[in-house]
Image 1 (spheres, rainbow, N blue to C red):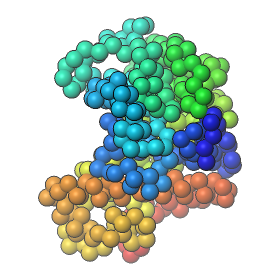
Image 2 (cartoon, helix red, strand yellow):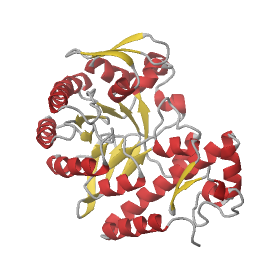
Image 3 (cartoon, rainbow, N blue to C red):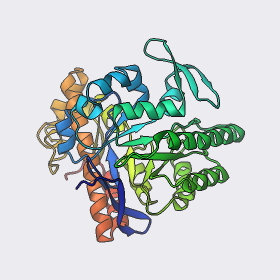
Length: 377
């Protein structure tokens, strides 16, 4: 489904959980949605055709990494990110703010923006709200994120408030820089750390800007899960019902289900691809660490009921061998399995919301994880 405008339709609800659809010129995003992370123009260890076949409607690209390598202007000259990486469906780009916080050296943050040193070659760069939007425009992304300042928790309340207020001012500047781009969207980012009043102030101020979507940032950055969920309980009800809600950088399958229950529509995380490259499989049966010696002679597949060949057609013994031997194929197969499971989980959530049984689906899924993979399936 495509349209010449950016539209979000809320199709059904079950308690706090929502099933919806984002439509735009490059296609439809079915929500709740998990966006595989394509940091530098690639979902690591995967072909883009594979990613699409698993059920992904949208991928995420990273402004910070792409501006450093190969450069936003070069990507634009080569036809934009969709053409460059052979993904002709929606792309969301983050603003680069989180990576500046976590990767870059010698950061200096002022009202104007951020000056930082590249982690790649030490070169110096300036990133203002306007430049972030310019870079995302050069990449050609369909959903662009405001530049914000993300504070790693735990942090002092005064520091959290300063960053939140700065992020609100930057959101206004990003909105002005983005302007009117039919068929595309800019999302604001709610900040405020783990301080209830700051989350409320940020959500209310951003809602008043009447943006096309809203992200909740500054979570999954060191705080316990219960703190993250508390902040969602506070924040989500304050955001417009008829706009998509995106929880940035989250997370585990358990994080995702509990967040869907609280009204979140979109997710991204490097976890399924990173875990796959390090020998960890996410499955219907819970997490399976293929480095563990108990898999050395196990002829079972990861999940014989899965539609994904990586989960169904290769023995755990073979996967264990690949992982322990540092063979590239091990990371490729486990990444394939993990992304397949995440998309299966999202489809299960969408179906359950439509059927009015999301909480039963979540309980059944968690019970299967708790039972583990040792008993016969």
